[in-house]
Each structure stands twice: as structure tokens, then as C-alpha cells.
Length: 609
Ligand SMILES: CCCCC/C=C\C/C=C\C/C=C\C/C=C\C/C=C\C=C\C(=O)SCCNC(=O)CCNC(=O)[C@H](O)C(C)(C)COP(=O)(O)OP(=O)(O)OC[C@H]1O[C@@H](n2cnc3c(N)ncnc32)[C@H](O)[C@@H]1OP(=O)(O)O
Ligand SMILES: Cc1cc2nc3c(=O)[nH]c(=O)nc-3n(C[C@H](O)[C@H](O)[C@H](O)COP(=O)(O)OP(=O)(O)OC[C@H]3O[C@@H](n4cnc5c(N)ncnc54)[C@H](O)[C@@H]3O)c2cc1C
Image (cartoon, rainbow, N blue to C red; front, side):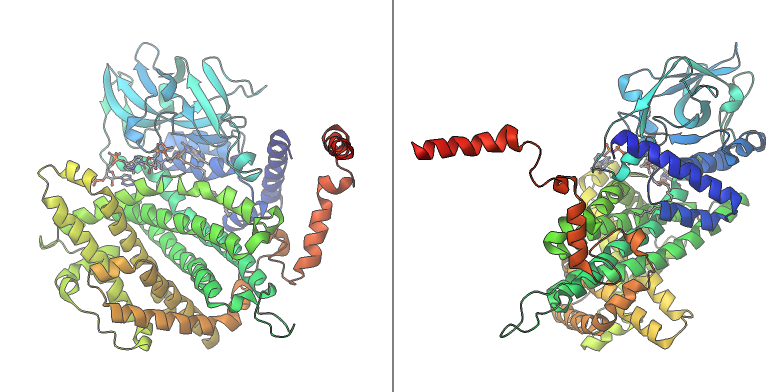
């Protein structure tokens, strides 16, 4: 499809999905499932996942009563317009202004520079009638920082932009189809006025007289919508990883190369240890991200209930967990999808493998809802704060509770003696805890050598990100272990999940061996025992690998991959797909008479001469 066709087709699908949701009707969970099967980014994502939650989270009761019924019935369509051409990560650096005019009781929205243009918001370019806009609030010449506003963008009769608004699509993005179904947009305000009651005022307010009343709750609640979406992105990472792994695993069982003597049957590539060493940790990651996603959903629900009761104590941890896990899982999944493409050899590069499209649509997850490095630095700040408070009497809680055992974890030596010890949950956990704590403490010690803490932080950014990743990996490993300790129906299933859990943990040890050795969390002998155990786990997973991806229950239609077909009938179907290509509509290609024939004839003539 051309971009225009793709966009229009996505509108058609989205509206059909909305009709089904209402007619059947579907619950929230079922609607989310429908979104997965629709399998295309579109304006509904931003309306439901960001616009509506922003009003719910930051609007007053009156604002919710006014706007939510309209949004819930989709009589208005909204998006989330925060990022600007010049600033995305640095939210406090946004330039759009919202100046209160006491004469008219309105805010005047203005884009003072080109870099202040809103740039990227999904659904903004062509669809949305409304947006939650983030802009600097100015009253009586004073800048109060960034706040949210509900703004109508387009005329409800003919969809034309309202006077004072310049709006459009930012252009083609990475890949052929992929994220191009979405109208990511730009927007400029030219002294555009909105009534005062369209500032989202649950947190802070501007009175009729133009007095700014600051929030009596943490102002970071303004970032709540991002926290909510980051949480869902972790579960989505599992879905995308599982999809790629399903394709690569099934195909690896079908594909044969080498290994035959005297023309006998060749080896299935899945039997090569190198293939297993690349594939099975990704299979394990798909399961691991699912379990940590479930836990994160619980954490998010818990913090939301606490916030409603004005208990803000766990907000920093919820922010650190959602930011860090969003970052870690999306980076691993993007890399994992690309690895799956390579695991499928040349055929993985074909569009009909399903992997190029999956990669193209998935990879911006490393950037949207917060650049992955910027988010890990938030985790690092949280860790540095936690380390600095050790010994102050305030015991670390939640995912940093292990830091409360700093004295032990800083000096303990791993008691792994034989390969099987690496299947001991307590020993594995302690190894990850020691590594994470030692990396965090080492950063804190290095930071303390700087007179200026911010300068020190800047200098140590790369180390801090590594410490943050170590902490996040510990969370994923620990939640996998907790899952195993819970009720799992069927001993066989439990055994398989156990194998995957230890593959996940041991492959991380192998991958980040430098961290584990340099922090003395393990010795090189223990590292080689871990490798030995890993190889043995691969052997145990091998007979069940295809069943473990079948368990994701993806239909062939959803997978959209010739290589990942359930029936394994890959080669005839590759031919079928090839023959569908428009280039194969004619035997002699268009352009033959114009370019190829004259070229060949010229050679023939010169040959005769
Ligand atoms: C193939 C399969 C796919 C299947 C898909 C199927 C279904 C999908 C279904 C639905 C899809 C759902 C949604 C669509 C998903 C995504 C794509 C679409 C949209 C994308 C949207 C966006 O990208 S919106 C824009 C996002 N922007 C960002 O994330 C900006 C990143 N920057 C920031 O968040 C912050 O500015 C910061 C974190 C970098 C902070 O910077 P800093 O200057 O330090 O902060 P402040 O001075 O502002 O604050 C400092 C203190 O505040 C703490 N803090 C920061 N953030 C938070 C927070 N969120 N909550 C709580 N606390 C926070 C910070 O820690 C500091 O605390 P201390 O003072 O104590 O240190
Ligand atoms: C597909 C897609 C959809 C999007 N949808 C929306 C949307 O609906 N609404 C919306 O408002 N926005 C949206 N965005 C914008 C997105 O949220 C931002 O692009 C994202 O937050 C990153 O910000 P940035 O582009 O400013 O990156 P930058 O911050 O400019 O990052 C560039 C580089 O600088 C590095 N960097 C930046 N700051 C630091 C630092 N402090 N320390 C170390 N390194 C740093 C980063 O790691 C990165 O390598 C979308 C983006 C994409 C790609």
C-alpha cells in the first residue's frame, strides 16, 4: 500500500474495531486483545492509552465529567502532545507557552520558536480533534514550568484546523509499512486562546484572578500517563519477543544444513549448540518478560491505589521500575528480533518471514515513552539515592530491599561448587544481588570523589547506566523465580519453566561476565560451571522448544510469517509468496525494452565487429 492507502486502511480497521468493541461488547482486556490482533499502530492507541488517562489522572472532577463522556464515546478524538522539535527527553525544557490573560480569562497558547513546534505526537497529524498539550504556564510574567492543557485542534464539522493552529504529518518513518500507519504530527500555535478551565487542574491551579496555586502533591504526578504506558510496554515486549522467537524456533526445526554422511538426512539447525545459544535465551526472555510484566502490572495497580489515598511513598520506586524495565525489555526485544532474523539465515531477510516488519514496527519502542538510556539514568539516580541512605536507619524496601543486606552482599563469596548449584534459586539470586549492589556502590563511591555531584554524575553516566541495567536484570530474574515458587499447574510445565528461568539467568551471567568477575560476585571457575550448566539446560529444552513456542498460541495469520508456519511447510509456501510478487506478473520485466535490450544489443554489435 502507498502511505495514503495504509493510513486510510488503518482508519477503516480502527473504526471497525471500535464498532466491534461496542456491539459485542468487549471488556477492556478483550479490547486490548483486539488491539493486538489488529496489529497496527493507529490513533486509537493514543486516544485510549494516553489522552483519556491524562484527563483521568490530571483533570479535576468537573473536567473529568465534562471531557470523559465525550472521549469515552469517541465523540472527540484525542492525542498526547508533549514532545517538541527541539525537546523530547527534557520535558522541563519544553518551549510552548500558555500565558494566562486575566482580561479574557483565557490561556494564550503560543509556539515562540520553530523548535517549540510539537513534533511526533501520534494521531496528531491528521486524525485528532483534541489534544492534551504540555506547555509552560506563565501567569503575571512568571514561568511556573510545564503543565497540561486540553485543547481543541480541529473544527468538529469539517475537520479543518482552527484559526491559529498549523498542523500536519511529520512524514515517512523507518520501514515500509510498520509505524507509517500512524499520523505522527507537527503542530504550531499562533496566539491560540483556550478557556481557563481547560488547564488540567487536579495538581495545580490558576484562579480567576490569575493566581497560581501550586500542587500540594508531588508535581511528578503530571508524568503519570507515561508511567502507565511504560508499564504496558513491558508486557508488549514479551508479546513481540515471543512472536520473533516463535518464527525462529519453528524455522530452526525445519531448516537443515550439513551433518550428513553419504547423502543422508542433514542436521536440523536447531540442534547446533550455537543456534541454541542464540535462540534459547531469547525464548527464555519472552517468558521472563511476561512474568515481570504481570508483576509490574500489580505494582502499578498498587501504587495507583496508594496515590488515590494520598500515599506517595512508593511513587519513586514505581517510576524507577517502570522506566528501567521499559528500557531493559524493549532494548532486549529489539535486539532479539534482529537476532531471530539472523537465526533464519537468508530467508529471514525476506519480507514474508514476518521479521523485517516486526523489527521496523517494534524498534521505536526503544525511543518512545522515554529514550532507553535516559530512562536507565532515572533508575541510576534512584539507586544512588538509595545507596546514600544506607545506614541512615531507613531500610530500603521493595525491589531495593536487597540493598538492606549490603554488609553481607558486599563481602560474601559465591558458594557455587558444582554446575548443578546454578539451579539453586537462592545462590543464583545472591549472585545477581551481589553484582547489582557492588556496581551501584562502586558508582556511589566514585561519585563521592567529585565535589560537584551533578558533574560527577555526568562524568560517570556510562557506569551508572550499567549499574541500572544490573539492577533491572536482578528484578527480572527474581520475579521469574517467584513465579516458579508459586502455583504452576503440571509438574512438566513447571520443569520446563524452571529450565527457562535458569537459561535466562545463566545467559545473563555469560553475557555480562565482565561485571560478575570484576565485582568478584563469582570466580572464573564458577563462570565456567555456569556455562556447563547452560549447555545442559539447552539439551533439556531442545525436545520441547517447538512446544514452548506453540504455547504462545499465535495463529499463522497473526504471525504473518512463511518461516514460522505451524505446519512447517516452508519451502512450497516460499515459492507461492515469491510468485505473488508483482515483478513476477510478467515473464519479461517492464524496462526490458528500454534498458536491458539496448544494452545487450550493443554488446552483440561490438562482439560481431
Ligand atoms: C509488536 C507487538 C506490539 C503489540 C502492541 C499491542 C498493543 C499496544 C497497545 C497499546 C499501545 C499503547 C500505547 C502506545 C505506546 C507507545 C507509542 C505511542 C506513543 C508514544 C508516546 C510518547 O512517546 S509520549 C512522550 C514521552 N516522553 C518521555 O518519555 C520523555 C522522557 N523524559 C521524562 O520522562 C522526564 O523528563 C525525565 C524522566 C527524563 C526526568 O527528567 P528530570 O529533568 O530529571 O526530571 P524533573 O526535574 O522533571 O523531575 C525530577 C524528579 O522527578 C522524578 N520523576 C521523573 N519522572 C517521574 C515519573 N514519571 N514519575 C515519578 N517521578 C518522576 C525524578 O526521578 C526526580 O526525582 P528526584 O528529585 O527524587 O531525584
Ligand atoms: C514512533 C514514535 C512515536 C512517538 N509518539 C509520541 C507521542 O505520541 N507524543 C509525544 O509527545 N511524543 C511522542 N514521541 C516522541 C518520543 O517520546 C521522544 O522521541 C522520546 O522521548 C525521545 O526524546 P528525543 O527525541 O528528544 O531524544 P533525545 O533526547 O534528543 O535523544 C537523542 C540522544 O541523546 C541521548 N540523551 C538525551 N538526553 C540525555 C542525557 N540526559 N544523558 C545522556 N544521554 C542523553 C539519548 O540517549 C539519545 O541517544 C514519539 C516518538 C516516536 C519515535
